[in-house]
Image 1 (cartoon, rainbow, N blue to C red):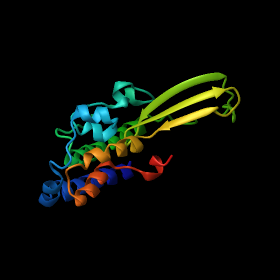
Image 2: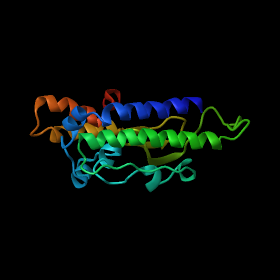
Image 3: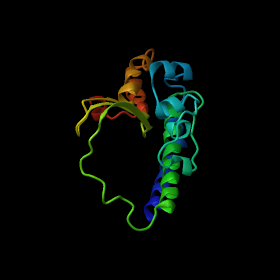
Image 4: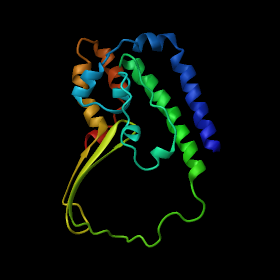
Length: 195
């Protein structure tokens, strides 16, 4: 809980440092705007999609795990530009800390992992696609099992890969110097792109 206090303070510090900075705001506002329709067609998810004004978050749209028991808001932008992508991420950091705070209150005392859980699981012939909301957007896993304790086939859908795929369209008509800012606003992880 003490760490959460530092996290909330850090978010406030970042907000005060950048959000009120006229140079930062002027540089990012109206830069590389994306409409909701175009974002959906490009396959972007997460904060990039929400910056366009669409309140789509799998934790609310298709609740899983503990998310039905916690309260949080879905931050959205107005124009889908670099500044909105920054503002959505900043607000999401605050919402994530709120979720952690609520989870800390709900953690049961004592042992909560099943000590009888087998070390190796055997899975019959099966196929499934599961997606979750991550910090960058939707992570998807498509797995195929043919018996045994290892998947026969697995395909990952990473949000960084999908969001980066939109970059070539998002930089059209902008200066080369803008490309770095636009790329940063997508918040990609290269290790996730090169899966």
